[in-house]
Image 1: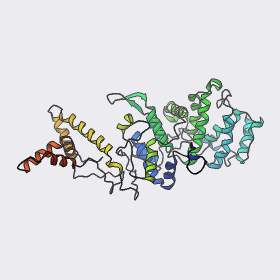
Image 2: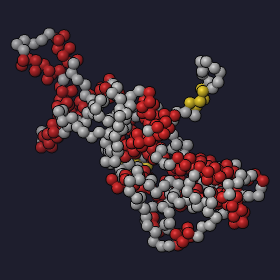
Image 3: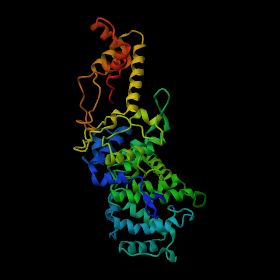
Image 4: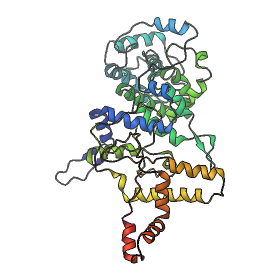
Length: 447
């Protein structure tokens, strides 16, 4: 939130929420919002059809199955279910648990916080008060911070579904596998933190509102706890080890059921703790799109992989929507403006430069069967050129009246082709001014 003191008519301050249009799109056009976020998630991580269907809830989440009944039996033994413990996540329950979070945030100096268990009798009394919906004054000294910390973990563990949800389980595993590429385009073992943060920002936008609210409160608490590790001896990885079973492990499974994923899950939660202050902000291009959606152009855009490395963090680079690997991404009906930004001079220049470079690389290759094959592919493959007045951002139809090879040749050879045509048709070459005018009328390539 930013506060601006500049207001022409009154002296009152103006509160500006940079995510205002993002939240407005979420509430007014939830399907358009989901399509926008999903199209960018599938650009960052590979989600085959079944895993994508799980993410959007069209099929049941595929999770590790329990090999025994011990954890399930303990789950069934839980008592004192009320509006908080053992109940589905609600705003009312979060309001009660926030009392624990607020109290713990004032006691981050306690050594072994979240690791050392509290007193069982005090915990039982505090649990009963929270379940009854009571307002509790935890500053009286009747309870120890370890009591509140243990109950917070118990609350998360007794939710019917993990805080990060079963739907998102596979996506979390895929994000943890995002690594950088070397100069040759090969994957390395170095995690790509920027892409991971971007993926988590998008994934968290798909969480139910109650889950997202509590997750933000929890990660903020753990972030500040880890910042005081020189006092409390609890680092981000120590905290992740304590909380991963409660917020990301599928319900009713043992450690042996996770098939060697425990370390990966723990590191993933530690990453969320370390970068929690960035994860609940919408990416810049999402903010820009939603702003344009309500104030100007409504053509849905997405950043492709090539711009992720070169794009500045402070600017929005207009690019073509990346093709989603899932058939479930839907079209936004009736909300595409005819005043598309696809024809801007900057985009035409960028595309023309890229096409020219590609054609030159192919044309300079030595004569070979491979070169001929590439040329044939250019001639046969149609170019994706969505029309601003008849196509939506997710449309996969092609203009079959144009070939990629033909457009490349026209863009690269340009005036040379036009001169040859003019010379063959006219008895004498036209004046240079007319030729230049003719060249200016050559249509720009649309992305």
